Image (tube, rainbow, N blue to C red; front, side):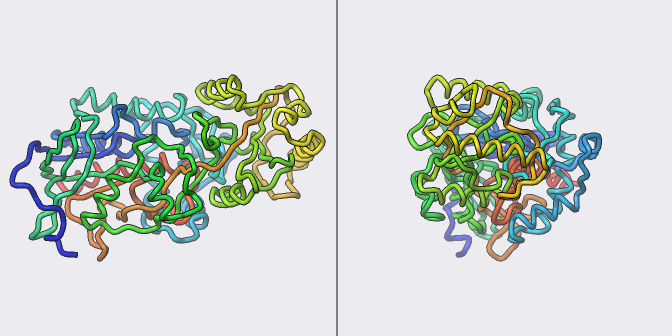
Length: 465
């Protein structure tokens, strides 16, 4: 495809800026902060939603990073090499190795950078759902709200504007040299061309809310609910591809446990795998709950009802943050979450066989005591499920994260189909591909967004020097 076959460049532009950033999740906001810290002043951030924050705002907030300062006192031996090797192995070596290397090292720097902006994390370092290693740093603020607050506060203090209800529709490139010169947006319902002098950064997330795109990539996922914000429909991804950005891995759509179809709210009991178990409708475990996310997805989708129950006790409930607990209590009021002082009573609420349910939990507790799961090989045997009250909720797979997207290098430059950077076009976060391969480790998405958002500003500074 020639450059001249792309979107026609308008004769004049309505707006002009040096740096335009699309998306106000972790990638977009961290890119804006980093660009501002790198000395750039004419920055405009846009988002098609009314509320900023993207999927970061409603995420678990878990941030994977090697950090000996926190991990060693807890007896956790970690290294950059181990982190890198786990990402490659669990992604079936379909990852982009230079991206993995850059990410595994820069996640630690980015964690400390966030703290310098005011972000606060708990002292604990945990193994979250699908993380496969105790490397998750847990924000004090619930979900991803802390990230959005510290990043947006910085932008407000430094007079970086954020334009809401503004959706990217097209990217303009110079016919002669292929440089990005601007884009078309729909701003409050009106089409406007924006001229971009230095850089266009795409941090607009994936397409897990787009049922048609997801079904084309994996027909089994058609009609499944999504954990994402409603705006996650792939608009910016399609605009980038139309402008010549290369892409791959669109078939790798990650699913995680969530609400059953038709229900209004997702309740989370599965977040910390060492605290919970899954059982099927027969009251029996069916998988190691600390398996990689694609294994868990396949195991749950293979059940006849394509749903299961997550069970925790009081310790597991108390370990969740306040917002997750409040959602669970709302689920109790809707009879979508069950709470009981005995496992027999819990089984009656779930309509699972009481004897099988009790035997399953008791057998699991014995595994915890012995330190070995002889049924499924679960390694995260942190706590027995033994302290009442007990909680359970039904869970089905929800479309959650798109591991496929547009290709970038470690400098966040978007690549064309020849592998060359498209001049002045950059991206980071879920809209991109290459870091995760076929399967993403839990806790890597927030870190990925922040790492490559921050890297964008550092790249611009380096190019300016």
